[in-house]
Length: 162
Image (cartoon, rainbow, N blue to C red; front, side, top):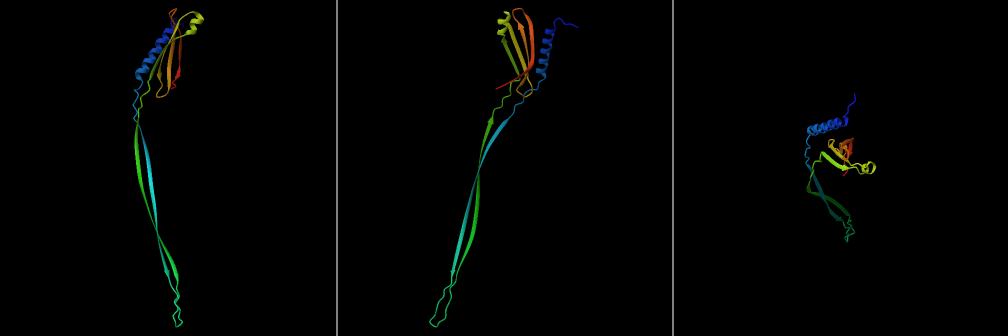
């Protein structure tokens, strides 16, 4: 079965698909992005107390010949005290998260068509974002303006690069 106006029918069907996709596409949701920077500073103090006790015993000789011996003993007692304190600084940062546009459109002129065939050709295009990705489903028909007719229809996927 041959259709005489298959290009026009294809363009109308594509326009209907784009319109239905636009109407049924879910609304973008706003995301609340919050970041919090937390800085913790811990101060630790260690104090060591040392008690040293020295005991001396002496040797004393008396005139009668008896001797008394002296001994020295050293005792050390250590006591440690540890203390720590914590300081915390919080800084809240709010980041604006604007939803990405879900539709794009383009219009252009093909300069090579004028150099090649001495005709003016316009390129129209549009696309819908695929989910929350940088990809668009696009359709780009080209229309000959010198001899009004639809020349080509390009269907594809476009990548958005920022």
